[in-house]
Image (cartoon, rainbow, N blue to C red; front, side, top):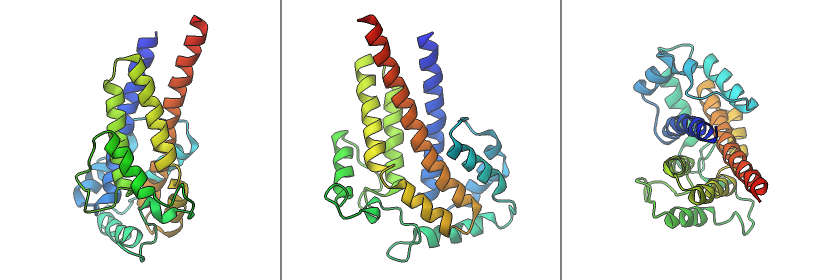
Length: 228
């Protein structure tokens, strides 16, 4: 029974990872016609790879289904939105850099250095290093997807437990620490419902992946207590 639960959990995580790659690419690169065709015109929005009871996830799904109604101009409108939301420099309406949302405290003032330390501890270097900051949301989502992939591949219980804690720690320290503020700006300034939905979905993905890790960790602890 536990094996089946693990298989189902891993399949769910694979679905979440697909969405991490999609949303990460949509905030890192200007949207192309191909992206719009694949995700909106071909109906992938209607067949999400995962389902969730998270209200934020359901809101994102509703936003997606109501977005990109004019397929002819959708890609063009999204490109304009991308430029205004994520422009390089002070003109960005919803900056993608975690350090932008620092409150000036010692814990948040060096978010760029701290997240790089996290990457380096896994001997991981983004192919975008030197082009965009390490605390860019697109880079952080890519790294999170790498952690999730590693977790799925593990079959040692102790290693799985350690990776659960690492995923939780990364999400808490480097994603959920500033994503709520970022998503607020997305909902306020995005002209397209497409980007509003992407912002909401990224927030929901971080919450759901974290909840899965916490649930598994707590379940494992309960089993150990019963054994003892």
